Length: 326
Image 1 (tube, rainbow, N blue to C red):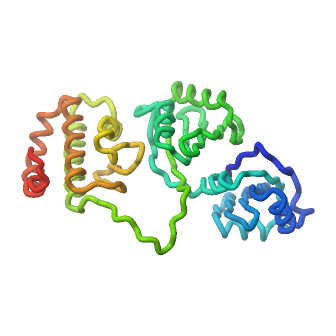
Image 2: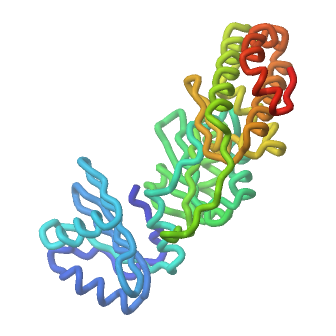
Image 3: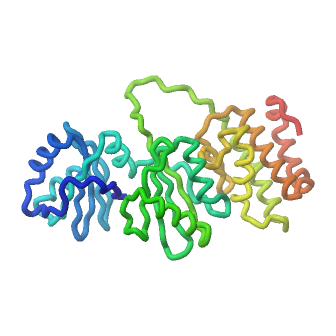
């Protein structure tokens, strides 16, 4: 993903055929301190991020491959004398350089969040509250349109919209247009987070409390049983994944790791992936409370109680040890 803000151009539309790119960059490093140099040819697009002392990062894409970091820097610098690139240089503050250079390596924390589950307005407010540094990716169901909304510490700092040629813009009008488009045509949202702190090698790692493999297996079996009950009923008008996430959202104040927006607890194909912090008791109670609450809401509590009898018997000793009763 080659995306940079172009609101502060220093110099634009130079042809690399007539340039000594390394010397030119050395000159502008001293003149502006930090920024980005954008390369574009008929087949390749890339960007190098720099400060006063060095190249910080790079991104390069073509139809065959995508290069990030040192590989992108070496490719773009090595090919600048042979490939007919159009080159532009943009000024950026040092913290903005790190933000934009980290976009391709941002960690996906939530994906395939549909408008059946939440609206874009609500998601944007949620990400502001959570002080997101990263972006929301929006794919509209109709017209193959898309957009990116960029956040820095919970503040929206711009957006990129397919109907505006993908250029980064701070336009509120374009953002409002995006919100209206999602309401009319529906779509899916993905949230990615950038880590703005770099870990130190050799630093002691904080111990993270994790549920035991036995509890994860028990939770997978419980959710699998409940999914079968919901699937065989005629009351559920939406898919199980959406129903479960909505229930998790109602209980996120009590069990933060269930919050669907954080992506710490994920259930798919009868398997659980968990990247948050919780002990055995917290995990078991959270999922049981969620399942029981959703069963009541859907009117399938008697069926679930009957189907889960064997599960409670199988894990009786573990549940009793955790202080959990049927």
